[in-house]
Length: 382
Image 1 (tube, helix red, strand yellow):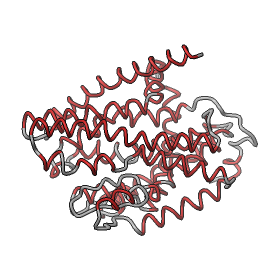
Image 2 (cartoon, helix red, strand yellow; image 1 turned 90 degrees about the vertical axis):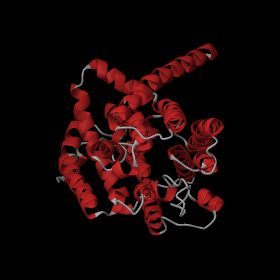
Image 3 (cartoon, helix red, strand yellow; image 1 turned 60 degrees about the vertical axis):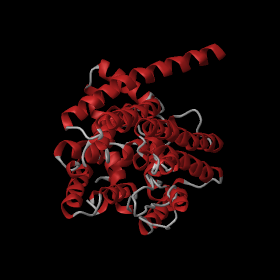
């Protein structure tokens, strides 16, 4: 790689502060596939989760193209936000962290209590309830990320120092993952920080901050570079092809030899935790993937028709709303309606994808409606 050619892609100050269309596409792809990914996970029998179509949604879309891409973009977008000072980031983080538990109440407490009232099945709905309500997921992680980054910026840490700390956190998280403290409360509480699990597979320790902080931290640093990028075409031509090929080869090797985030594990929970309790080298390669795939997205956005670009922008703008709304319908329709009527939430893959499409067709208009209502309230206040 020609370092001089790479340096020539950047200006000394910010010259690129508008919408970043490749970032919009990076956010739109996971939010578009969210209902399919989560419905497939909920409705597919464990022994068929690695069949081609479930594998595509759960592993391919759900992993590199999904949450990692979203949280990398989340870090990058800070530089294009009006509220990017340390105090605003910490306030935003606190709101997201609390919002994560409100979402858990909406997508777990309400459906599970409804399911229990309909079926009386304690093992299905009551036993795991408190683990689901107080467990962590991507919103809690996002909240902790913004809070921690806000603290780092408040004490004036430079980007290199933030990355060094993030790398150290990733290594530490890799060393202590899959911890069982033999206490559900401690497992749930500490699961926000490091990867915990229990023998019953009930603890939700998804996206612990130590294991995942490196990805959005790199996104934050990349976002600063993006503001100074004066020649995107040239930059992405340099950084996209070879890293993307190498990442693909690496993922295939992980799958074939069963290590890292592609480790199959003894049980489905252990397999999922190999991804959720991310290893340091997977975090590093996910960052490489994120930067390189943005080059593909940049080229795609130059040739897509305008109506698709408007749809992509709408999805990107409503990503949090779609995420929250779709989860309620996924859990309610699979864990409550299907389970109550049929005694199982498992479906053939064709019916699963049809259900996922229906959930998206319900969710997206509701997200647009909510966006319109909030816009009118802002205009009324102004």
